[in-house]
Length: 319
Image 1 (cartoon, helix red, strand yellow):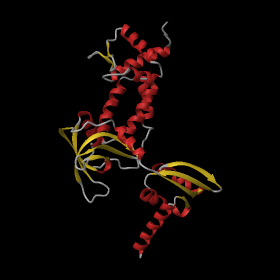
Image 2 (cartoon, one colour):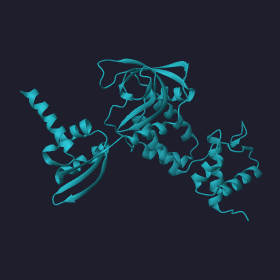
Image 3 (cartoon, helix red, strand yellow):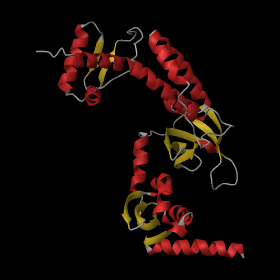
Image 4 (tube, helix red, strand yellow):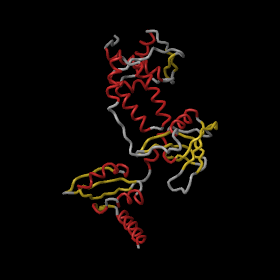
């Protein structure tokens, strides 16, 4: 006997919405989203078909709606409408100008289908939500970096970057096949194949001085972005233990995650911190110098040696 509970009804409606949102939807994808079995998904699909929804399926591929079939605009709940406000504010501050404008246009359409009382609800909180970014995410000379990269990835065409690497004395021109973009350590990055270097590289968005679309198709088949980023997890790490004054430790909370922070424990009036760092020679050593007068290195000896080397270089330059 079929379960006709409200929960099942909500799930079937959500399945229909998801079918409208993508070209192909896999049964396993639906089962994972709603935490049900594949048999339950098959049953729900049959219910939609019996209701007159034109769904076609292909074994091993997934489900799709017949081309041209669409329902009228979906009504959003008040809670869903509230989430749009947070998303809009994030888009305004943390993406480039072009994408921000596209999202603002989409928001007008989303708000248009809200009930009158929900529109008032949204308006009442809209001016009370503020997102602030302390970092400059994009170069002023290239205000459409993300939007152009999205188009390149979708169309599988190369882009030309005018790029200033941190160790470079000037701007170089790079022909890139973008694999994907990601946000990390308060910066946007594009990961892709660089034809100049003949290898995969990542580029920070705020160092892009210009970006140009081309009609040149990708010359390589690229895997999904996460497969390349996961490889970074295999980079060798070094265990570091330091003892930091308790009054200083709280100020390190934000940056410690970027240096492989693992754990901490209190010892008397100090905090022992453990890290598994990828760059002990420069990244960790230079960071430690910022608060070194309030800390002690417990291990490894290699870090102590490197700190002394950096201090000696500083001393020589001050003479």
